[in-house]
Image (cartoon, rainbow, N blue to C red):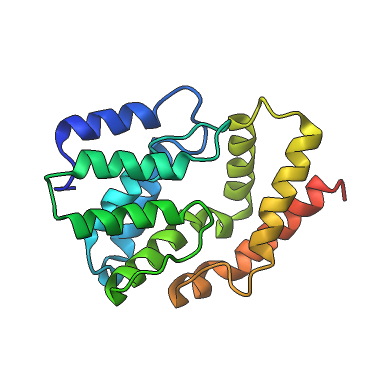
Length: 197
């Protein structure tokens, strides 16, 4: 975590331990860092991926739709002068990509592979064991507690169905092999529950 100074780390930990965080909290960051450890052999720029992990949900307001952009801007501001501008731009691109979990148009092939892996790690919860997935769903619902149930069901159905409609949920062969089937089962069950089946 050499790119992130101690004061910035304190700032980020404070953001991730806010009382309105139920899934997008420090445990989520720790889980992604463990996945980064497990996938270390595949990561070209470990510090950049770790920075993207730490900043990607730094700003998380369920009443807004620009959290990823604001988190990317925060990363760029906090990393300015710590590393070169191209690297900061790559980190910001990874963060922005979490808005739709689609690979950005990165010229550098190693950076593109790192981003694909980062996005897959962020979506790993979709392919987790059924109990962990259910806990994730409940935690996200608590983050959106202000949304009335009919609107929640409609919106959540759309989000989950969008992932299920993809030819592949995961971008990397590694996560396709380890998580794809379980993710499809979890998403189908969640959609059925939302539909009252």
